Length: 179
Image 1 (cartoon, one colour):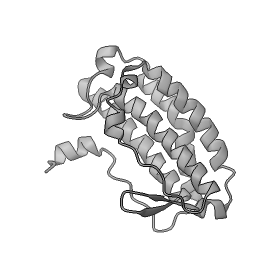
Image 2 (cartoon, one colour):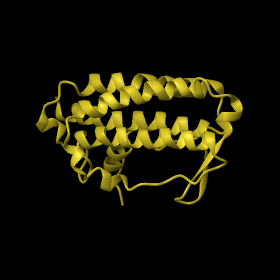
Image 3 (cartoon, one colour):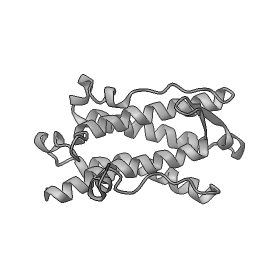
Image 4 (cartoon, one colour):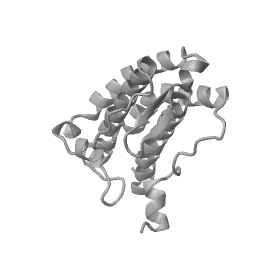
């Protein structure tokens, strides 16, 4: 069982809550988050040293370095899911073991590699998202964990939340450690 303080560290902004009705305002706001995230992440982390980058944001959690590399891995996967949903009829997407990916050797790489990748990816992703029609935003993919259908407009919100969720992990650790 997670006690409140651990839960607050693990989910500092809470879990994603899908609005009952996703409006154009929601979508535009979420796209804005995606657009600005790489620059904000770079600003937050660019003065951290290796010891700080190798500090876990919570007990049994990932290090800041692993979180940043996870963001690139996860967002690339999401972008591909958008492409599948736009070109196939409700495709079943490929899930992956993000915990195992976080243990791979490239999770020790300099964070700037993933921050640069996020900048390029988000620039292209936002370009795509801003040009999707209402019908395209309704398209769905099926996540194999639970066979849940996820619309593209909902997935924009999920990934805006994902940005803010992991940003808060890093920001809160920096504040707790007085860095």
